[in-house]
Length: 285
Image (cartoon, rainbow, N blue to C red; front, side, top):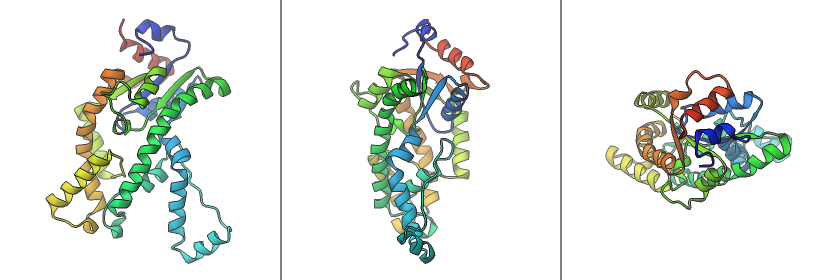
């Protein structure tokens, strides 16, 4: 770790942290809090994915849908209208919508092969966007004067890395340049995340082999054809399994590359100084 002890962290004039963990446990909340302090640069991996690496795919998909409407098609072909994605740190809906859910097209789904093609695009984008954090540490200071840096990683970082591999390029890049902090959720957090997801199921990303296995098992267990799958039903069915699958992978990242801090430890903090105290309290003396 770049801050082996509590004292190293407290003495550091350049504090750099990479937050990992499931979406919904506070990574973006804490990153926004640090940014609002005025002394921290907030790098969002999901934002980088959706704008730099997947932006063209997202906009092309918008255009394909618009071309189905004669009025819009006419204006698009004559360059009379402009279609763009309006992704922000707090609104990643265009990226989520592009990833989609496999299943019945009439219910908003997409064919499984197309779904996997987009999953592969996301995998490549997430690896590149996460490794780009190192470049932005330099940019943040050189261009904007920020000496403190927080990397708000995607909830699926454990899907695109090999925690047990000491040469994993993505984890090594983050660990060499920042303190990796796993926001560990409790059983209560898990149930809350599941309830929230079931109320509004969203597209999600997983490793190709895992997703293909789940898809095949779902079709077999429910005895349903691919074209008849309810997209929301499949995603809900997959989500709890995804949480269970990711937990040991997050734990391995923290064990081999960083530190573990209960998400509740950050509950109620309102300043960057309080955040720094929590980090210090979880480093060796």
